[in-house]
Length: 466
Ligand SMILES: Cc1cc2nc3c(=O)[nH]c(=O)nc-3n(C[C@H](O)[C@H](O)[C@H](O)COP(=O)(O)OP(=O)(O)OC[C@H]3O[C@@H](n4cnc5c(N)ncnc54)[C@H](O)[C@@H]3O)c2cc1C
Image (cartoon, rainbow, N blue to C red; front, side, top):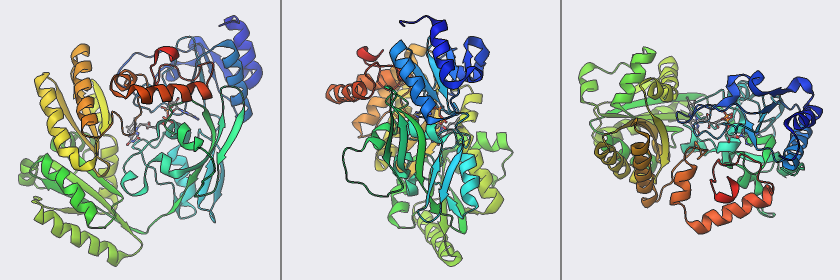
């Protein structure tokens, strides 16, 4: 840093106002971590709470010239340590940029500031019979954070992830410029797609200051099917068969028996599954269906009932209304259950969906060999496996994760499907990715962020951006 800390603080305060600049421990513990299970909290030197896009850009200009590392923060619900700041750094918190700028019903888009939470956007779009369909399990997450991680969640099997639903961005560059990319348009064939480069870049390229997202009509009728199977392989093998029917589920999850028992007990959840079925079931498939018409929904339920029977399901329970909602809410809380049970990490590896059984067998075999345990649930329709890893020895866990991630990559998958690499998985990524790809990514990083101030150490832990 070329300026003293006091001088830098004055420069930041001149941008956002003294009341919106917190320093050191005055900022409180919230800004020192996200929800990742690994790593200690880090108190940043500065926290700024900008109120406009222009202020965000000006903060970045000051940080670039003073060489202060910057970590953007939405709601801090991330699971990869990507919103964990650096000790000498600035946190740009988007908590005060939380306006819904516009719900444009005719174009079926919403324009929001990055601090808007999913819960608020859901309530606002519901008034118009519309919905933003990206549905990660944590509704307090912000749209800016979703852009940062390319969040996915349960409805991705039908509606895609954040990158399929963001049509445009306004973004602040580390140089202090504001740019606009895309917009309320659903197709674009003009130049490199910088919107997509920024989505999933974990705050390392540019900060989103406004997000334009695609909305869909809310469909009137919905049902959730809970299908117990005698083993996990039968569940994962059922996934391609369900998708081949063309019923287009908006949710296709698997939950292993251990995890369902844990969340049922913690949430006092009675799903009406008799004791003998619970004893025999090793894993469950959860299928969400929605339709404009009741008859069509009933026909789809009937079709899946017949399919489940032919695939060896132990039974099928159709949950509607409150019990369906309770199951989904309980499934969203699986992360907290893993944490409460003492999990040492949670990973979200993705493989081609037809390779899920093979991957899970291999992960369990590797864990067994390491004297560790892996249990979980996942977005089965996307091949996205969430495993709570029980392995307290850090060195053993690091090696185990390396082997599990390598197994996923060998099957054509990737380390993280939706949580990002952050500070926790960046080293594994560096070890497993093609060096030519890493070099290109490093060049992209330098083009956006020549001073290397944006979230150093997250996503790319390359020597030149430590
Ligand atoms: C119980 C639980 C369940 C979850 N389930 C899912 C799930 O099913 N699917 C899923 O995908 N995730 C899930 N998550 C993870 C988390 O909710 C998502 O990663 C979410 O996108 C984080 O949003 P946030 O606002 O909390 O972002 P933060 O944690 O604050 O930040 C995340 C990243 O985005 C960057 N960032 C923040 N704001 C901006 C901005 N304006 N511009 C650019 N970068 C920015 C940060 O620097 C950081 O790199 C879950 C988390 C919890 C706790």
